[in-house]
Length: 414
Image 1 (tube, one colour):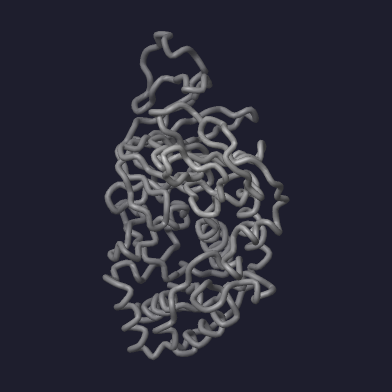
Image 2 (image 1 turned 90 degrees about the vertical axis):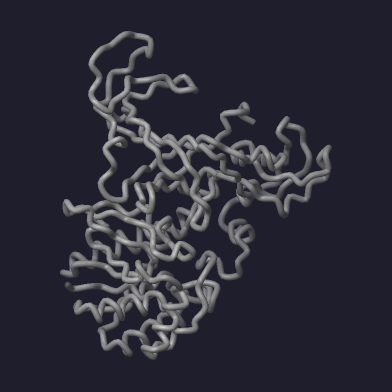
């Protein structure tokens, strides 16, 4: 196969490309230039996609004897990742820029260009596995090394994208083995530190960086009862679950720390309260996508005309529940069967058992809108709108959705 190896300049992508070469593929390396001012991206162990990373990628390709190119995706990155990050925070949500980068850059823009140039697959150094289900369909699974597993940030990949994705590190038992292999191959990146944090925030000060991009104004910090307990310099710089930096003027009655429970950008308020109130057991997600073919239980039947849930109507299609009224009084047109799964809301978070279903509603424009409803068997803390919930069954990634709301069924809304 003709394989395009995405070379970040790190050890993982270098070894992945080397393994693709060993497998007999016709491999070409490409490094993505994501900023026209590389100094605005982090360097060393604090980021990726810098000038030094480009040089490291070139040296790896030279050692492997494969062609090397640099593709300028800076405008696409600025619009689809950086601006999305700003817009989400401005709306009081907490986005995952790495998820957006994988979705819109590495497995949308890059793959689209690769296919147009005649490549069969894109190869990356992600720790995840693509498995054939026996019917020619691809499934996304966790990597062998769960400590390094990156299937969560790849949960945005679609069925079509999985058909052209290659992850040669899938069955590697540890990162130490990857580094040892890189050293044996003479790759200069063998001991290069892992990248982390947000690459487009040079000094790591997210709040300060956002203050330059979003109009901030002082406002009230209130407790769960609505009583003012302090002031903030700008609500958009906070995130659900945050404890540090609140600088509350009024201590809690029990003397225990308080955490951010909710961001209200329209009111310019931050709601704080005890850690116990961070627990949520229901998540509603939008922008739903499936990593491969969805399981049968997740496919709703046809959208029915809105009707009362007590109205006796017979013969619903198999796997299709009657239209029902939500807690907020609105009616959804079609609901899939509930299915057992595990839900994960952070890249390195623990998955928790859950039950989920898909609701389909006709929108105002006559189209259909899918929403994912996840009921958590074990509550999670610090879940924020804008984060991504990824569903699993065993090691298989079912799909993902952007969290729209997260709440506790045991307590009223704040």
